[in-house]
Image 1: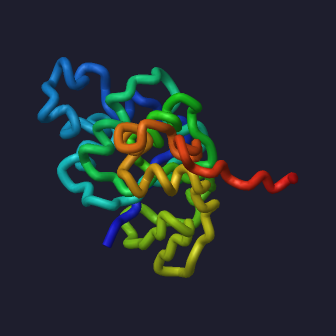
Image 2 (image 1 turned 135 degrees about the vertical axis):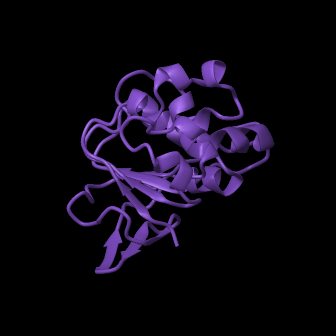
Image 3 (image 1 turned 90 degrees about the vertical axis):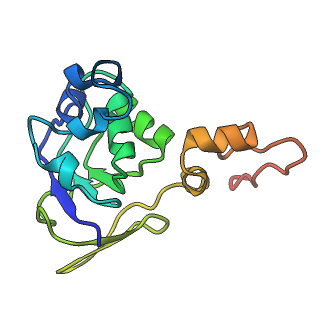
Length: 175
């Protein structure tokens, strides 16, 4: 079962992957092994596929370096939940197919406890109950079904939520 990795407020991209371990410095095949090198040195060696990162406010601030979320993707992190995300970092997570939920669970979940998270519905189950996270919008569920926004675009030649040639556009709920 996936586990919780709990972090505080203002986790920046240099905390996630210090610049000196960027892919062009450490190597494309090993840079992910330095994720959280200074703040949680055990992380890269012990994180399991599907594990959930819980952060405080302003997750991913700092530079817009894409290799910080790339390291998390290579380590197969399942999702990140934080009350707020730095805008460009949030987009990088979604582009790479790492679900990011805006919610404050810092007082709800404990570091290391096992959970389940249904990405489609946003239902998170933990030892003391369940939490309803805001479910991803339809366009993001489409992208995650393909692995990421980038994978969706490569396969369909359009972004999720856009209609392709010959497809009927979605109904406008206001008409």
